[in-house]
Length: 77
Image (cartoon, rainbow, N blue to C red; front, side, top):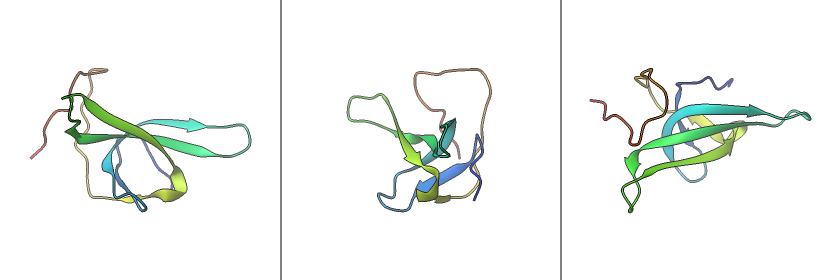
């Protein structure tokens, strides 16, 4: 599966779910995606982490918005 920016994905190991907001491709072929959860952390801040592309599976449709970095994710219904 080729991950794209804006895809809603889930990590097959930890079940962490969110939207892909960044993709890194390294010289020797490793691709990683930054996934941002719609849930806030205990401190009220956005939670994000990087995963190897092979660990991610589709998790439905995401409603991506433009506008650059934001302090908290926009709730979707």
